[in-house]
Image (cartoon, rainbow, N blue to C red):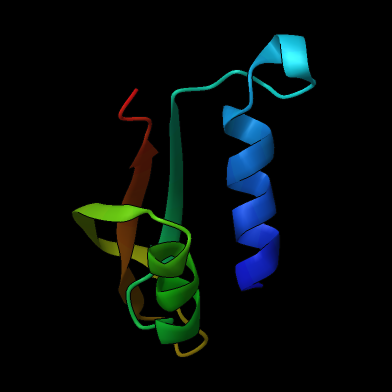
Length: 75
C-alpha cells in the first residue's frame, strides 16, 4: 500500500508533458480509526488537515470520524 501511494503521488504530480496529471495538490480521506491507512498516507507525504465527525457508517449502526489529508507541492 505504501508503494502504491507513492506511485499515485508521483503520477499525480508529474507534469502533463512528462506523462503525469500535473496536479499540485492531492487530497484523501480515511476513517479515523484506520491506523494502517493513516500511516500509509503519512509515509507518502500527506499531512492531516481536518477531522469530520460522525461521517463513516460503522457495522453496528454508529458513525465514526473521517480524517482529511492533503499533499501539496512546495514548488
